[in-house]
Length: 276
Ligand code: PEP
Image (tube, rainbow, N blue to C red; front, side, top):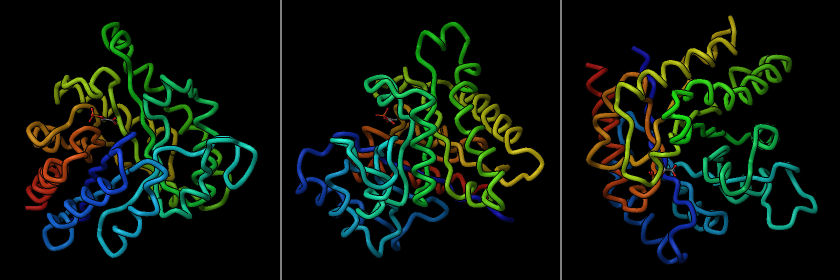
């Protein structure tokens, strides 16, 4: 049986405060990794840009992948964009992945579909994988607009898929470099979570929509869709047992090595029980 590995990804946001604390957190993660990895579950951490080189040195020769929290929309390499880091620069600093479309970027920096499309193109042009975040606000959830909102956000992926389909043989590549994270905005950092039935239905819809975009080629049939929003060591197993949940994007709980790896272990155990 060809079983897809789960992903558990820690988005550290603007934390920890110091390089020393980054070192300590990574040492703690590495020390706790049983036999160097978590079976059937990939792990990744996403520190802020200035901490990427140090994290990269620590994580070399470990199974923990490294991502960046953002890239410049306007240039994939270099340019006059004060304060921004490009896809090429974060890649050079050691990142293999980048978060695009996180709700905090959408909310505080006004990032819309046009900007996110540019970021996706830049990431892919530099061979970065993308964790593309989507999710509805509480008001949208309450007025039952969730699926409509997600489809609008996923239209960016539709554009990327059609651009890649026109460049010969690139879609297989896309399947390896694209992860979708469904994160209801109202669940991020709040301790509130949707029911597992709601997440299951939403993930199935996301997979179906992407499948339609990809068409007959079928390379995105096994798209990895993560759940994010107040995942912790206590509730991870509930989400992990849902077939359509391929892992978790974790904020607060990823700043503690023990809880981060407990979440990874929960997904590992769920995958292992599927193999049996
Ligand atoms: C996030 O910011 O992507 C996130 C899921 O945060 P938290 O786990 O803290 O809700």
